[in-house]
Image (cartoon, rainbow, N blue to C red; front, side, top):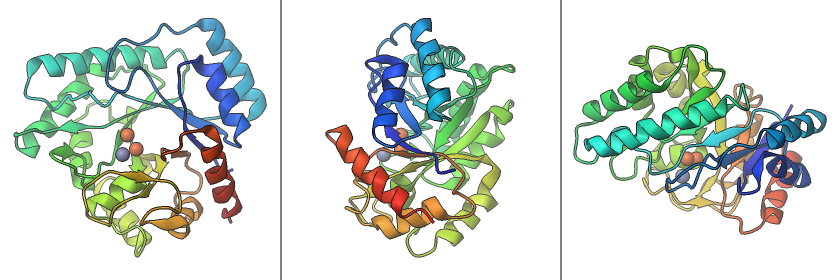
Length: 277
Ligand code: FE
Ligand code: FE
Ligand code: ZN
């Protein structure tokens, strides 16, 4: 099964996202839990969730992925910023249980002036305060480009966070191809080697989702500028090698490529499905 979708607007609710996904040949999707720059989350409508569940069932839509707002920074040395992160994490994880057994992805955080170790400890503290024994949602930490003082630009940093989390059975990793490439991992020249490094540092069993993006910049640039599939420096051959890799092919893939309209995603999805072996 090739589980492939893209980032969609959540403004019109879950059913509409599932319908949008189905209309462009996708069988999963990603969405923001709230405004990506923060702000309040909209109330979840139980009727919308029920209609979504029925539509998803009949259209084979699985493993949807929520994305936390970018402003979340549990690593901050400012107490107010950490408290905001705890509030959002608590609220979002509770909301996720209204659509059980899905995934919630977050950027680990930024150290801004602190040593990486201190930032890593604060992120783990926030996860320990937020994860619940009985939750059905898997929280994913995203691999980052290493822009500025971002935590998670190396596999070792993600491993160091997970090592400190008590309920680590609820924690996985989302592998963003643009970010990993920008962070300096050569997925074009040596995908197997990068996956070996991931396995050594984190364990491939933790890998639960892929953000499939091309990159505007060269490997190691630490820029984080996404490009459409085949229009960047990674290229469609390397990206379809990711979707076809025996260790990755059964994971869900989510496009986060710059497309002003759904038709752009539809083209990329068609091209990737055609290149699927
Ligand atoms: Fe992200
Ligand atoms: Fe991403
Ligand atoms: Zn990015």
